[in-house]
Length: 90
Image (cartoon, rainbow, N blue to C red):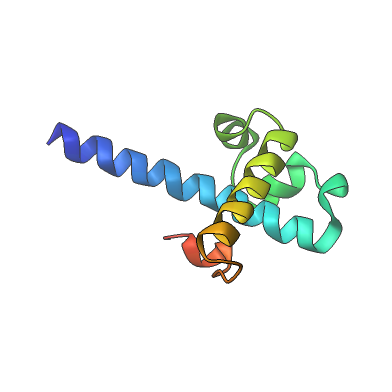
């Protein structure tokens, strides 16, 4: 039972991470990364500031992880990839 609880918790954390990344992706697309703020991300994701900082130390860390994820998807699929939104399992 304990392993199941750990697995469910890990899945929940991964979904939240993707929720924040997806929100950042939408904002970067609409206003650019330089104009995006933590307040924008948490408003888009519908989460608290504390939740943001539980997953990302700063907006710069969020942008770096977003860029890394996009680059990884491109490499894995030779340039053809599904949108990040499709990876969110809500």
